[in-house]
Image (tube, rainbow, N blue to C red; front, side, top):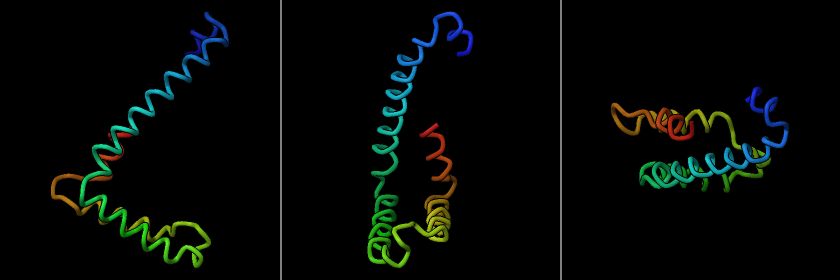
Amino acid sequence: MLYSIRTHGVGILNPVMKQLYKFLRKQLSNFCRKFLLDDAVKNMLLKQAKRFNKEKEKYQGKYPYNWALDLAKQLKGLAEGENYLETIRKRIT
């Protein structure tokens, strides 16, 4: 990237950023379609969302860290041989 900037100038950054944005948008869209629409994951997230909405004032609108840890443990235990958190990481990266 540094050599491209030296060769073509700073004007190359705008097209590069547009391409990066398109790529990330596509990856997140695929992630949402393939992973978040899984019934087990979707139900788990909906339950967390309802719980958070009920207790939002108590936590001042911030999602509690211990809830995130519990959710991570639940995601790890969803299916044997398949780690959902690792799947999320692979899909996004």
